Length: 289
Image (cartoon, rainbow, N blue to C red; front, side, top):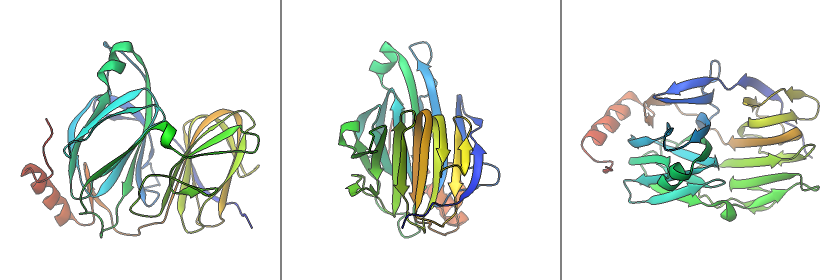
């Protein structure tokens, strides 16, 4: 029997400054430190990229202890890292980096995209790793839009993209370290769908654009760029689009461990943070120029 999860929080997605970049950050936000195992959600763009305007150029920087994930909705980004990977991620594609014991990567709109110009928009997630996995070897996974399994509503007004996890007997191709679901959805006006979410998962919906009803008439999301979190009850979430909408749906089994973060490092203790800084300075996370 399907039962809807009850809503815990509804929060806006305020702009924050990340260096020269202005982007939206619904997580963390006042009152919500994380939605375990998800630590951070950044919604960047849409930026009108051109040879005269290219703010989203992130030079080489390190990570340890978690998984930085990029879901690209518009444009093109070029990824390169200290493992030797070089990949152009296009709209609808995903790059899933397992930082583990350490990786250095850089990302920016591809040179070809900057030259021709266009909108760049995406989501960056930080997904925590449990203490047993924080020092595993780094890894990089890339999916193009055509590789991502898709589920459609009965009337075909909703397309659900299964990036990780499973839904309606379709399984995402991303290999995950913990039990998580990462879905994106494009819903036409009046399109609706019920998403199955395990009762023990922490879960959220983020609205990138549009207007939706969540769990029937329980709550109306009045406009774009809002996040809803749910209690660990029920086993499903229902949404209906009141106009064309772009939606992110996340859920995961909580890790329930202390989080100690300093900049690009996410560990369990302050000592481990200091060790990460030392290892980075000594080149143990590799090199990228």
